[in-house]
Length: 142
Image (cartoon, rainbow, N blue to C red; front, side, top):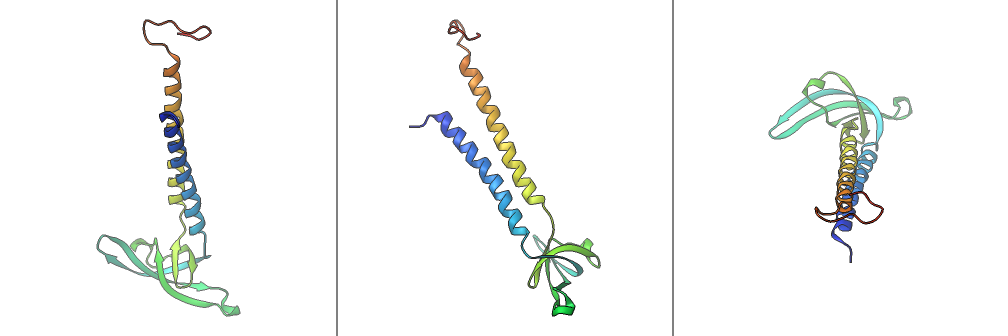
């Protein structure tokens, strides 16, 4: 049977690894598709949702049978209308290139690990000190 502190340490380690693993998975998911640029043509405002933006980009090499695609661009906004932005595209859908979410998830994982390590060290230091009125065991400081 595991002690309470061991179970807490395992939980902190699992949560930390979960955040870091999620960061790698999100990064791998966002890296799919082909990196290219798109020109944002329009954006529709939707209530309580991000704007739905559409634009054009080239899928492949036009000289080798590529095509011009008109589709949705996730992550674009009204400020991007008329501009060329960096995207990754797959079929008729595209998304802006941003590593924000993987960095946030990885940072949360590292923060949880550091907070757990700090709590563990504080607990270990408290356990070494004898209660008031008792003497410390031989070889330790009171």
